[in-house]
Length: 347
Image (cartoon, rainbow, N blue to C red; front, side):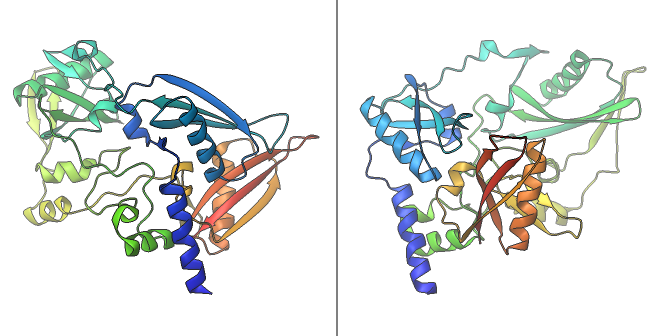
């Protein structure tokens, strides 16, 4: 029985990942770097993610597209079995998305990168400052000054936290020719999942769909990782006297630096944590489409927020013995405010 199930997982992954249709699905990261030539919408009774991905591939073929990126999927309010899928189309020779440096803000002669650009690049340093900054402009001026002194071409402010009347800010610095970061794809299959182990065993292109050790999260920087890597301390800025001191509280030992530098970063997923400490992660549509669920459950009730729905889904998934879950469909009652949630479970 186990052998048959494993075979089914491999076959299903092959059908999803290596479709016979010419138009291939792009990840969010791949799509960001290309210019779309057209946007299209399809409607139909799609019961699984694989159904609407294959339907979109056929529709993209007809439009002469080599690839597509699904931006949104909605359930029709008039028919809970009808899905409406939106996608952007790309030619095989799609030009790269234009990114004019002149469109970025400049402080102290240093460019301020948006997260969409910064997350793709490897920083050469990190600065962390603490002080009294009455406005957003003051924060940028202070960070830009530090960046300029370190020879940076651009910076990205990643985090800020209030400490009484002061603010502590962390920013990453980049050279003009900063190398690309080795990013995990947004739709990477968890390596500790059953599907991940099957793909690794299969090897080749299938194994390339699995999370890679040592690759970075595509949605977040890891401040501790980089602070330890660059042996960075928090710089306290005294605005009144224009003097700066360095805090020794954040100093790290050489052994800590070595440990942090080798630390892999996984894809950041929405995580449900129960009161007893048990945890489970929610898969996005693209990742779930590459995996085969071992079971599907459903529950009904009145829930106001997406967080409520995810928590209830995660709680039930944990009780059912799942490592991961995916909310496949939400159906609204025709009479009343209740909804029925369909959840796919994965090991």
